[in-house]
Length: 481
Image 1 (tube, helix red, strand yellow):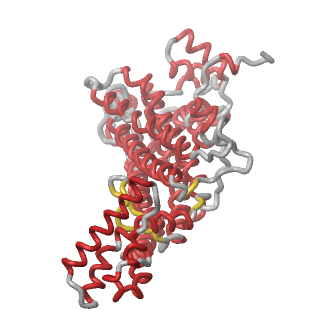
Image 2 (image 1 turned 180 degrees about the horizontal axis):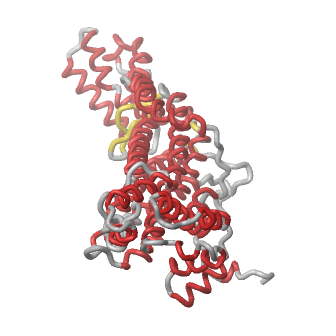
């Protein structure tokens, strides 16, 4: 090893392989512990404003050391004290000897721990929301471009009535739009734990302010505002309710389900060679089969989406076992489940943006698949045309039934093409309508209102959702495979 043990211990692939710098930083030790220090500064400033004997010099000293954390000293302190918050209080106090007596005054460990977690959740949503907006924007452009391109619809993964490529993309978009609203709501619903004391009663602060309830409430309000929150939870135990974590992570898990469905559809369509995800010139699809173009990005999204969905079990179970005012068996679990959920969602959205920016459509392949199935689907139209030309519906139905079964036997038993149209053209019974066959088999007559639905859906529901994110819409994703 050349001066590093980096490769001798486990590294989370979420960070080392996939995640964006912004999300990796959001859950980093530096972000966490600098936020702790900011919270101690907010507390001291508010306590000073409300009359406690704290000097400007003490606050200035704390502010001058807000960013320069001695991580080695903190680690050594934690080894001795077995308490991460006390270790960082001691480390901060070492560099702020004048302020040492008033750091963390009246607070419990959850003052920094829980409030920092809430800040990280809020900031995590602020990283995800513009990314989701960009995915929706790229997919909306795709839907608009292919709004009227007919394609086979599938129910039960069997060919069904035609739809359009753009309309199918709108099914994906509708789910993503729901996720957008859910994530925004979860972000906006977050409150601050604020200044609540050891079991949430604010007893220590009431003592500090000699029984002045108004000052304790004002302290809570001031610190909440300094941290950038509009509201604090009015009641907490030692911690904020762990149902808040359920609320946040359930919407991320729901996003995971959406992305899994979209990327599974792309993988199915890639197998049919109708749609492909982006593929670099020198990218290798298979070590054994040089011709292959595997949908690796979509597969990655599906793989990580399953992890994102599975992570929801953690906060559900954690919230259910928080005895009375709290137990500490939430801590180790949340150190993993909260960051991993946001990191995983972040990676999925970056990958999906890359996919949606470069989706390739093959209209000729789509057209061939339609030609293969459309004669069967057009039989009702042909019957109606024969009746209008003076024929008998029952006689025509029987004729077409026999010819359809013959054509189906060619397809299924002989592996041939669907020759129903040729059989109809060769049968004198259908001579009165032969001139109409091309019109009766025009795929665009089978797509109903799909193009109009796309136009209305994009203008009424999708584009307005993106308005708040216009300034962040041009960011491109450089994806490492």
